[in-house]
Image 1 (cartoon, protein in one colour):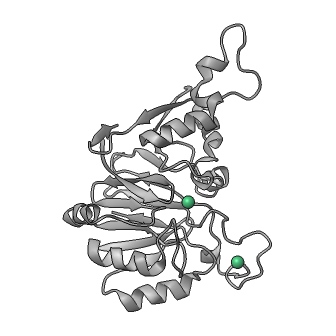
Image 2 (cartoon, helix red, strand yellow):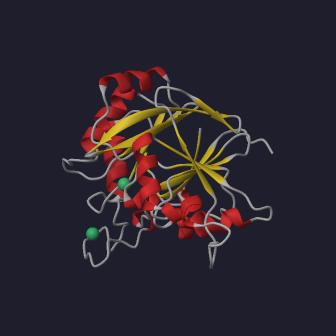
Length: 275
Ligand SMILES: [Zn+2]
Ligand SMILES: [Zn+2]
């Protein structure tokens, strides 16, 4: 079934604590506005060719799949190994059961692939832990195959083409992903001039970019830094993601509208955006 456009579903738009943050009495955490309720960051792309591509297995993944009626994932990217982006990986398990039983390919960068194998040996080193005499017992293991992407090359998978950026994120690196005229740039504290040039040359229809808080941050983009990069990359439209409780939805939307002459907006959970 072909679709006219690629469609993103925002599964989660919030920072690592989720919003509301447990125990917090601030006005955003206490807000009744549903757009201020943010699960941990992940998205799903339904492509024109009807491929279902997940980016990140957030700790809220099961709830996100239920909220958005998602029962199929054809491939997944994990951008980096921080808990909020990968500790929901086991929630892919029921999607592998079938029938027919299926295995989901997981793509990430080299450092993250190593880390995932260490964090989840029962998934990625199952051949070392289990054998005929010692089969896995209980509820089963998610059938996931780990693929390392070469940052400098394109990959083509299931008829979809992707390009990558390796972004600086504190002591670690994050995979930036480009699919057609969409770029997904999360969890980074800077974007290099060369990366900006590359993104600008893409003449993006949609950029979704890290925007964690209204203050300077060591591992993420602040609102002001994100605004500066959006200006330089100059997409047709831009979504802000991974917000913490310093950023109230309506206020951030207003700030973005005051600042830009093209659509820039905070994304929210269950939102659909096309490109
Ligand atoms: Zn994160
Ligand atoms: Zn709060």
